[in-house]
Image: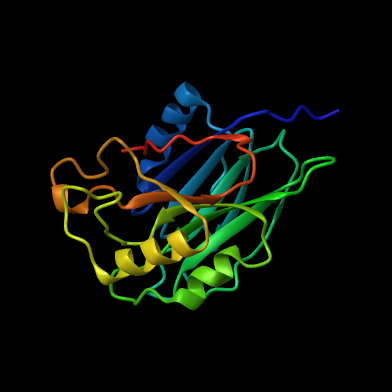
Length: 207
């Protein structure tokens, strides 16, 4: 019988190309042992493999120059299946964790280019028909709620209003994504609607 963790440890990382950082990343994973890893801007082409021992990789790769690529890695011991997203502006990959006698939980790794607009319909696609959802990633959305030292932008205002109107919680990392570039900090967000917390939400990011 497969053991299901009562709490699930997640990690988010906007890697801005994973290929040249893979060895360092694998070493880091051995130290913290997350259950789920959400990657953004992987910049992988389909021919390039992303194999991490003890994890199953679900990914969407760059189909055009503008595409950046996302991935979700899940421990092999956790029952899971891919749940592709129906979004066009927001890039993303989602998986569903299968829990016996309980509703399933969907986890998505997402990325939105700062050059593309934030659309309410895109956010609705992420959360519609899903009762328990955890969306992790970089939406280039700024708001004082999670970015107190920076300016807000239109994307952040739209996301904040959407979260407030749909009973969503937004968590931001306590550490800095870009220590040398303060205005780029707190871009990695955890947006969730989970009836009962079966997750340990770790809002730190790998640097």
